[in-house]
Length: 85
Image: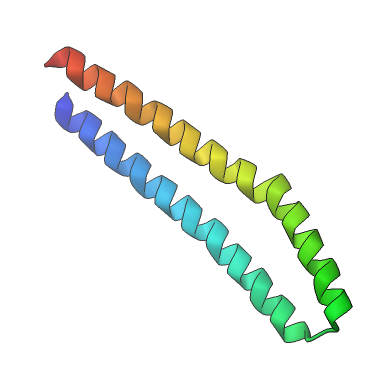
């Protein structure tokens, strides 16, 4: 039982890590695309403000959900392990 829970926690850790890396990769792709466009300072400022708004509306909630779900599952798994021992 403990081995199963450890495996589940490990799989959850890998899923969380991969999800985070995919979001970071997408953000890096957007940044490189913006750098290639080479625009004026005013356009860069507008794009920066738009990027911050988008990031706060999509990336932060997505990452928060990933970490909250992971945290809850790990706490439940630890509680099960402690109750078994």
